[in-house]
Length: 304
Image 1: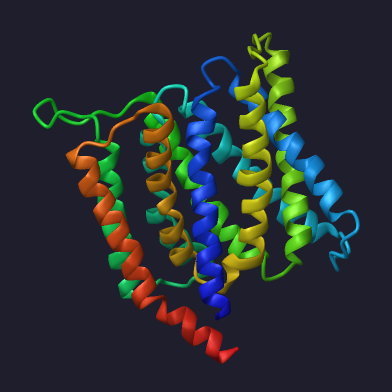
Image 2 (image 1 turned 90 degrees about the vertical axis):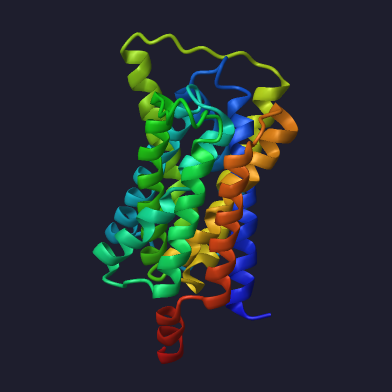
């Protein structure tokens, strides 16, 4: 199996694990403060990272540029996670999943702006198909006669998608400069720091921090900390660099599709005819990106 194919399979796995977070978080945000939940999630992820990496040779001597790299990755990721988690208070797991997937549109724009690498025409077509599919599914519960709707939660989730797109670009850049293990460990520690800072700020503003300890909260923290933070960050840092950021974004667009199936099984959220058509378009875009690939990326790989 080629490195590129292995990377694609593992990134699909990451998308599946992220898809489960929408259901997991939706089950607890009604009784637990989003900031408090995020702090517990990243604190547990930091503990896992510490024990996993403490006997590993990361082959990375911490310096100023390394701390800056992990700082930017961690800060951008934290803003995305925070807005997405707060947004889930006001929207459904299915809706949140598909709006989050709109980062597939922002990734190639950031790739052109920051990395000066325009995606191939085939990938642009795939992006368009995925975007149209996401647009349809985001209006899954809307009656065509009553028009479209866009809630506060949908808006917060859309902004989070912009930050997740930037996060994908930053991972692509810095994973080529630093050892993957060091990158994973550093960004998770920054996520914990920022979530703790946000929680302290909330407490300083006399905000009431609500939470209710039960097995659902514990399971949600465990799942999001290990599978949706540690494992997914590990996969991204080690394997995303094998493909272009735009193709990675297209693969990650499967995340909302997975979130729907899990929301259907756990929360009984239903996808209507519009949503089904949207899913078909998303899958079509992903298959097109897999079939055609990013020709410019392949050429650069041959050149190196």
